[in-house]
Image 1 (cartoon, helix red, strand yellow):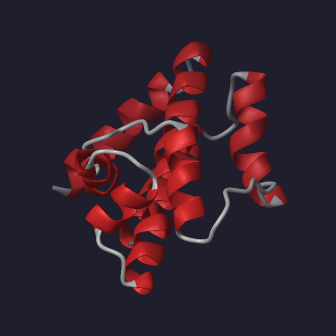
Image 2 (cartoon, rainbow, N blue to C red; image 1 turned 180 degrees about the vertical axis):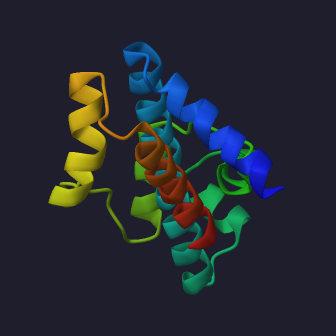
Length: 137
């Protein structure tokens, strides 16, 4: 299995040498990690407040299925409007923060330049971001 994993990383690192693929991979990885972090934080706040998904749906005047999809992961790209409404109902707001300098160097520089000095390390970093957001829930 470890050898198969090594082949995966080697193949991905080779694919990341293509500037277009690299940019798409970075953007998609960041999108997934960001949405996962937001949704996980909102669901934790919902649970901490004692609200059910149905309560939350009533608070923002949507069908309960909208909230269920948001928290089940079946809604892969929620609108910022929905996320902001859910946050408001939970007494929160969405804010943006600057990436730490090391992460900007690891992610933003290759995105802008279309190349990475170490594609395998970049791929592993982006994967760890997505994994962190899933295990934080």
